[in-house]
Length: 134
Ligand SMILES: [Zn+2]
Image (tube, rainbow, N blue to C red; front, side, top):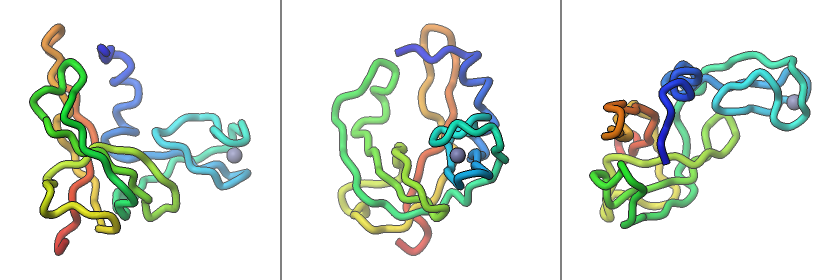
C-alpha cells in the first residue's frame, strides 16, 4: 500500500501530537481528530491532546511485512487502552520477547514508520514503547 503525501499531511498534527476529537454531545473520543463524531454524527466536537499513556491489553508479533516495512521485522502491534478511556491499535517499539507482556504500562513516542522508496517520503508516526520502570 502506498501512502499519499497529501493524506499524511492533512492529519499530521493529529498523528504527531496525539490530537483527538471529543464529542461535546455524547462524550465519544475519535482519533485521529475529525470534525464529525464517529458515534453520533454531531459536529459539536473539540480537540483534546491525549496523554499518550496507557496499558497494553494484548499484542501480536508479525514476521511478515507489507512492502516498505521489511526493516522493522519482527513487528509488534499492540492493543492499547489509553488513559483517556478508549482503545487503539498501534505499533510497538523497543520491545522484545523478554520485556513485553500484557498489562504493562506503555507511552507514545514519535518514530519513523517507513521510508517509501518510490517517492522518497519518510513517514513518521506514533509508536508505543514500555514506560520507564517496566
Ligand atoms: Zn457524539
